[in-house]
Length: 353
Ligand code: SAM
Image (cartoon, rainbow, N blue to C red; front, top):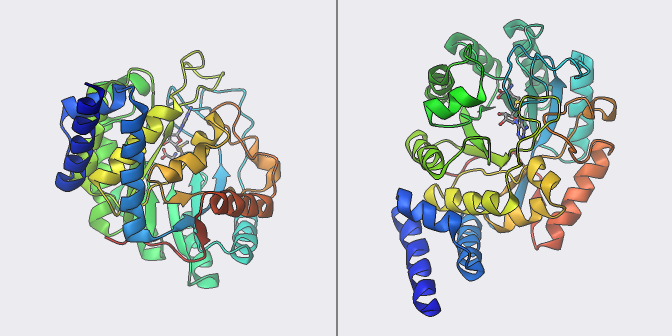
């Protein structure tokens, strides 16, 4: 009986890998199944798939959280505009460039500029910063993650030299989106942004939180189908973690088990995708990032932000690494990856689709 179930599980994993598709029922089976062996096989198959394309390498991205001012009021996010407890900060252009300088010396060849939607950083300022980074470090990629903008703004950043853009779609289900965001925010606009980014030519990343309030197998199924349709170069998923000063402060966090299963499924549905093992995953479990890599992820994003501001970029409670210098994070990550048989790659780590 158990052996039959295992054979069915193995056949299903093979089928998903072969067709790069999954049905609602198959997803439900893999997310609710309790047979550890089947889940381990899912993780193993995803890891082998990533190894075939990227080898035993993990790409590192230097994350620079340059502003926590935000005009949006997402119900889950610690830097939402209504959170009066958030201590606001902005890095100056010089501070951002100095993060890149120390990052470059540490072997980073991708800088991710992430922040809230902060009107202080006009398109002109963003373009100026991107141009500065690209002229000082022409062998590096610049990733922007600064939210929803017009197509013209995205085009301007791209023309200034930005290579990649991360914008999690948050959920592919419009009603679910409505339960996570205030009514001023629109799911249609978020999705429009992603299609614009792809059309312009960015290496584009979408993604979602695992275990966000009101998420169901059905909404996750929509997420996976959206990924299949968009064919993004990157997908960022990590567990939802409550932040006590937000409306979702009392909600349950997403789990590591569910995040690992979804990382593996995404790897099988879209084999060349750049898939980070996120800081949120490392926050809910001390070995979360290592286990994420072993489940098929192939990117980690150590923090390059100045230590003085890290505690303030608090999207969720108990965020890790807020007291560590950039160099500590970099070498800690190298050791963690070595510990599971992987090497941190010193290159841009582009998509190999
Ligand atoms: N403003 C930009 C945007 O909207 O894409 C980038 C910054 S935003 C804070 C980055 C991501 O953090 C969001 O897309 C969301 O998925 C994630 N995030 C926010 N609050 C979170 C929480 N409580 N737990 C886990 N992830 C969270």
